[in-house]
Length: 330
Image (cartoon, rainbow, N blue to C red; front, side, top):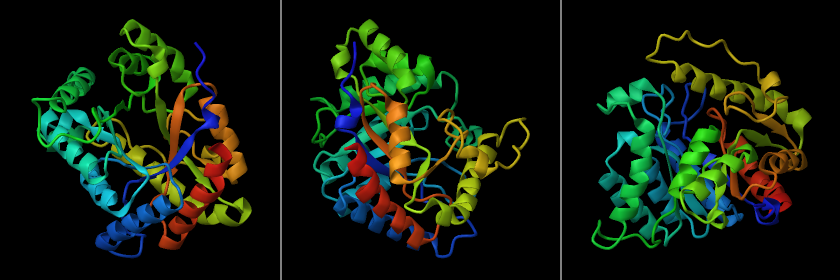
C-alpha cells in the first residue's frame, strides 16, 4: 500500500529541552519564561506543533516534566499541537500520566499529542526506583492502560480528545512493528520504518489507512549559512556531546570523544546523535522530503534552541522555521 505523499500537508513544529548550561547568560527562571514566549510567538507565526522532552539529572537543567511545561504552553497558545517527545513511560504510573495528560488536553482544548518511550539512562531509572527490565513491554502496556483510563469509567475529568493520540517513540524495524501492532502513531519521520510499521498494523488487525508517522530531525535552518555556521557550530557540538556523555553515565562504557560539528552536517540521517543538518530553508526542506519519502508522515519538528543559545539566535531560528521552512513543506 502506498501512503499519500506527505509534502502535500506536512506540518512543521519546534522542539524545546530548556537546557541552561554554564555558558548561557541568564537564569533558569528566565529561560523558562523566554521559552514560553517563543512558544507563543511560534504559535502566532503558524507553527504546526510544539514538543517538549524529558530527562533527569542532566548537568545543564534539561527539562524534567514535559507535561507540566506543556500545560503552561497550552495557556499561552491557541492553535499549535502540543507534544511530548518523549515521556519516559516506565518511570511513571499510568494513572498519573492519564490524569496529567487529560489536564493538558483540557487546558489546550484538545491539542495534546502524548509521545512516550522507554528511556535508556540508568541514573534516571535509579532516581525513580524503577527497573529497566521489560521496559518495552511495559511501555506497550501503558498505551493500553491509557486508552482504558480515558474511556468511560476511568479517570476524571476526561480529556477533550477521545482518546488522546499516544505516539510511540520507537526506532528501528522492531520498534516500528510494535507500534503497528498497537495501532499507535509512530514517532519517527524516517520512511525506512514505514514497511515494518505497516506490517505491524496489518498483523494487529488495523487498517493501514490509520497509519500516522512524525518526529524530530536534527537540523538548524538559516538564511545565511556562511555567516551563521561559526556562531551555531559550537552549540551543536555542545548539545550532541552532552547527550553522548549522559548516555553512558552509570555504565562501564568510556566517555565518548567530542564530536566534530563539521562532520555531523555532512551525514545522512541515522542515529539522532550521528548527524545534524545545517543549511538554508530550501536545503533543509529537500532533505526532509528525502527522509519522509512516501511514508504517512504528518509532522516534523526541529530544535527551536540548541545547547543554551542566546535568546536572539533562538528567536531568529523560530522565525525562519515558521515563515521560511514551513511554507516550503506545507
